[in-house]
Length: 301
Length: 172
Image (cartoon, rainbow over all chains, first blue to last red; front, side):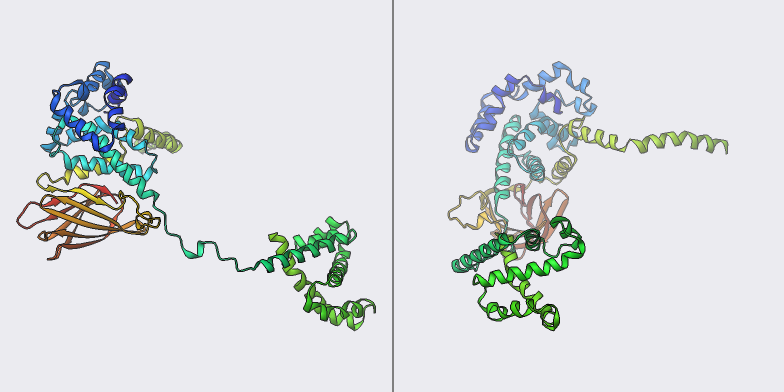
């Protein structure tokens, strides 16, 4: 029986039912519902008027509402409650249909997740079943439902807002670097950048590629730097050597400096030979070791 | 032979039509669930309402929620009520009895630990939308219900020779 409710003329609904039930604080709604029940006769327009309107419009037959429900469209809410109490399942269904829109409207106004919204609706209907025999004024089931829904939704919203505990490993880890270490890393980065800037093309491009895309395929490096693929390996070696020399000259790296300074002289000036071959592995590793942290710093900088 | 042939021929176009339409059928079913003759009440909601209607106890003493840690105002910044992992504490009051309940979240399930004061009931029935579970209540009035599905529940504490005590439904 969704449609009769939906078809209620707006002014009637808004004046009599929705604002009063939706906007009243939870504490005061009880007084209103008892007032309606005690002061106004059961056939008062507040509780049964909108059903009559829908019936006049012939909405049920037009919109294909179940035949079983149709017999209940004319029954007052109080009568429905009475019949539901005497184990009439159809009356219970009719009661749900009659107020489904109102309950859903309240639930939706709270912006709950779909799951919570469903829980809220289920809880409200379950509570109505339990309260059928205990409602003092059966005609005011509507306001009672609105209040109950309101309260339940508030609880669910508060439950959903509770902070989920997060695993320690998902928290930000502590930064153990001291300000001094950060300043020194920045200084080293600056040195590396200025050393690369001092190189000439195509060495500079090769150096930049080494920094930002380490271990790129030779073909890529050749394309970027405008070299032949065969030249790349030699240029790479040359660039690494030059960079290392420049950094050492500018005083970078206390402990590699002691051991690296003689190397370029001995390794570079006498061409080829066992010095170059013997130092090849070492030299290769050393710029890596020197430039490795730089790369990481560059990446993070 | 002829009959089966014609039946096959008749069935084939029909089946082809069915095979081509499942998406439309599903859409129609969804639209019906949302706006159809059954109204806006979802199937699960209606089923839960039906189950609660069937399980209602008009003879029971219905308690009221007296205290709910979720509704309580936070007194401290790190109040346990603001943490999802902390248990939720509820108290249900009736004129002659009160039920304390601790609800702990364990993934999709809930662990209920409760105590009724004064003791007397011997069995606790946990009503859910999927049916009822029963658990014994010891002589001090305490009971434990592990693996209760999340969603609406209600407790009924059965007394051997007195009216049962029921709590209102609430979502846990």
